[in-house]
Length: 270
Ligand code: PEP
Ligand code: MN
Image 1 (cartoon, rainbow, N blue to C red):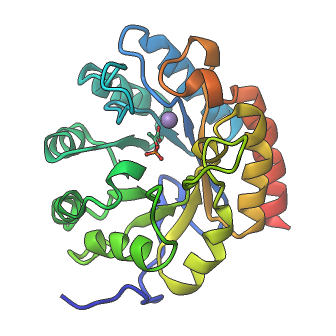
Image 2 (cartoon, protein in one colour):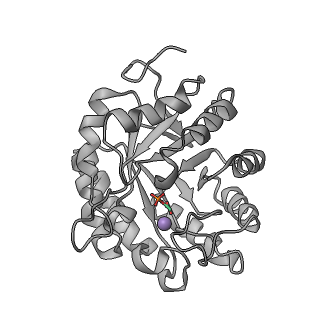
Image 3 (cartoon, protein in one colour):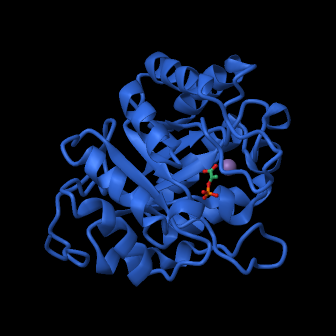
């Protein structure tokens, strides 16, 4: 295999109807799909589409810090795919192991998320690279690890996947540790131009996990766009307080999302 980490000549990435680099991509949806209340996901998916999102996110399997917290459910995969069918939009969900990877691909998930906790799990990255090598319709949203340097480790993690032949990767800064006092993590959208100078991959910033509080998400989104992000991945829920996982704290409502997207696209286009 040839080391192409800093090769800028790899092709452009299309997510759903969006050619990255031609317009700002917005992926939005709840942190976690609630398998007991699927309508929250269906309503949220429709509402974020209406607000301007071009792809939907929703956690099926969740990497929870507390092992006694809700860990996700296989049942949520059907709900995720029904949301995809109803909206006609591609869906993004996190896979944490090879069994989940196989289930997600079988179901038709086209954006595989690698979470911050697994961004340094080289055997998972390799398994994903192998599994999608001949699936050009599948891409990967690769979160930055909480402890990862912005250039060598992050781009190398992407290359673990791309080395098998599918370069459809979105690097996703989502805040690092130690936290910036008051935020959930240390916001790191400022690594965007460093990544874009050094690699082919698109950069899609996740302001939600970075700041961790809905009220700060709009400014963090604008900062990401100002730094040159190709897209945003934002947690949103029709009723954040009824959500599970991170939603009560950090999900914006679809109305807030709509306002944020208008401002972010205005800045992106300017
Ligand atoms: C998420 O996207 O809900 C998530 C768990 O993200 P991260 O891996 O960045 O913490
Ligand atoms: Mn979350």
